Length: 142
Image 1: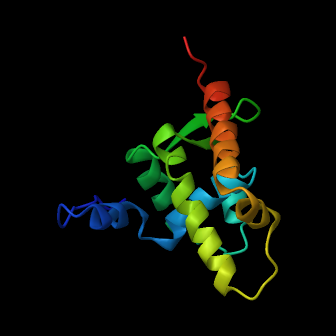
Image 2: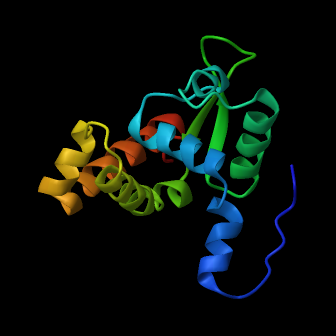
């Protein structure tokens, strides 16, 4: 995993240092909008990420506090990945990218984009609440 070197104090440059890679954004997408949570799940995404790149991006996201891994209760050599609060804070960013992409992509609009067009704030709130519930179920509050 490459260590991130911040090139400036610009907030956009800082954000791009972490999120400027397409694979990072696609992993975050899968964690937010699908039930994908394991290495194998991410490998099976339509974009066909290479194994070495997936392993690197998962390490990067975890080392920088966007995701956490836990050992699967069913299989001790399998890790389950989930968003942290820092990762969940990216939901509005990912949503805006999705809306923009749907506007200019000629393919069918997905249900979530339709929901976002009808009630963006409410849909974002529902997504955040669902993801926060996952955190609590994985790491119970004391």
